[in-house]
Image 1 (cartoon, rainbow, N blue to C red):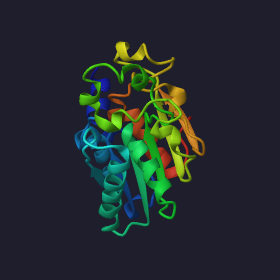
Image 2: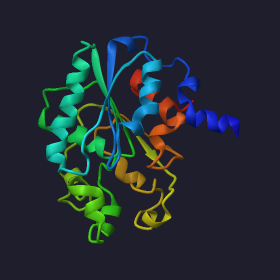
Image 3: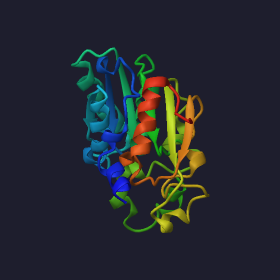
Image 4: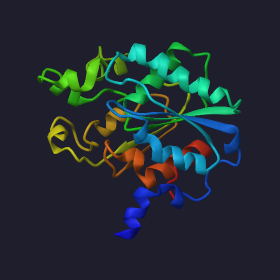
Length: 238
């Protein structure tokens, strides 16, 4: 029990030194998910800093605007914050909606190439939850205009984006803490996104982990895999 508690509260203590030897010359932009804040990415930020990375943990009003408005502001802020340190490379670690912001931005700015990108629970092909719940009273109020864009129909914004052109690793969760929403999803799912819908053409690697959409960004094993991909361009299956 104590070991389990330590793993979740102090993940940086258990990560080891598997990150790149050049991490001190690199910066990582963190983008949280829908209806979340920078606090949700703090464990990830601490772990990255402990490995020598510079970190820009970017907040944005995820429930107030559409993705087309959120993406240029949030991603550009992250790039600007990192460039102040003149890093050799700028990476991204994103959760959920933050992943779609990155895809949208770099599709609109193909000349701006990020380093490596790790997406946690990304609705790269949309979410069936949006399909089933978008007409439920209060859904738009809770999730905002960006949340309404994340369905699985051909006209949804994620389905309108093309293959990724950057080095991408995707971590998909296979456990749910929300059985009600999981009824809208094919198995396996993380409570918000079907595993198959996290995939996108052009990705370098994809791994499934037994974590939920809501808490995966705080998981020590997820953080370890994130560090490994940033360093090696692949996940650790040893």
